[in-house]
Length: 134
Image 1 (cartoon, rainbow, N blue to C red):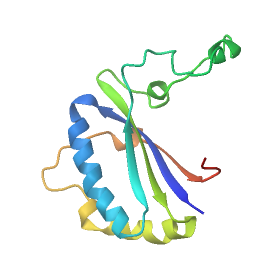
Image 2 (cartoon, helix red, strand yellow):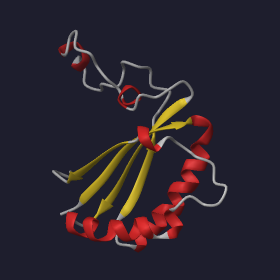
Image 3 (cartoon, rainbow, N blue to C red):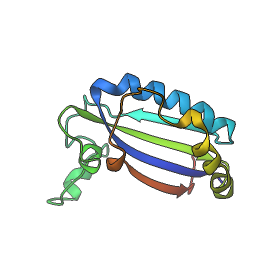
Image 4 (cartoon, rainbow, N blue to C red):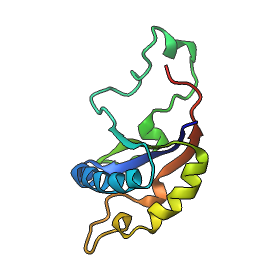
């Protein structure tokens, strides 16, 4: 059963190209070690806050509840956007066996004089089993 490492990453919008290059580089390494793929999505900044609910009246149903979007969840600062990223593994066992090999590979380590892209301490991470795919 597929297993996923998932992340919300606040990234300065001026560094999106750097992030993309970084993720392409390490994504190749992850796949060499058995990951099925790495997906990175960037937040659609054109969507106005409060309009993220697609069902007619869905927002009204929650009434006065505090609604959070991805920018709030990732605690973005001025000039930052959100990357939603996940790595798919064939199974939890494959992930637990192969991820240490990925992380030990020098190709996923910061390169000489490589500028920091995002604050790693602010990254939000979780591990997930696939529940359903339709």
